[in-house]
Length: 133
Image 1 (spheres, rainbow, N blue to C red):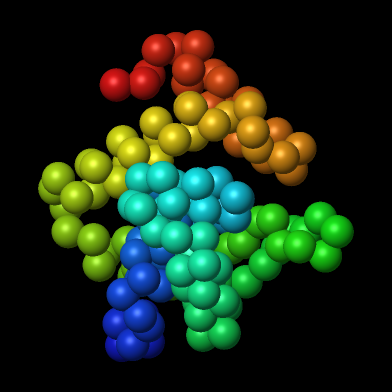
Image 2: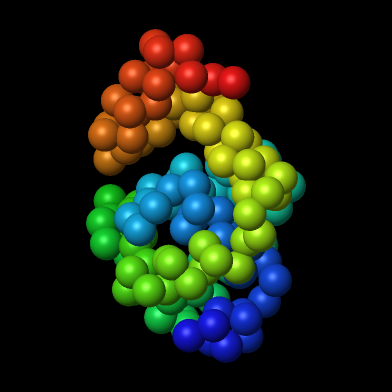
């Protein structure tokens, strides 16, 4: 499994790492795109290519759509998410990813589609509790 993950492009691995560490087993695609574009500086074209690569390798799969467009994704197996997460060293890089993802979620909570309503509720709760630091 590690070999399969390491055989993906660096961009694909980065997208998978952010999803695994910050968003969990099932994640909202538009939110991951926001994090990758705004926190990591990835272009939307590279993000889309990385998601297609991960799907083609059966590392992730769509699990919810709107008008035939995948909105939610999940890791194809829990072990994939766990293995991807272990590829990010504990320390500053991991903390930076969590902090960046959290700030982007807080900043863009009102732009999420209706399918992200559970996410929206969670982010608003965190914001209300002043957990923004």
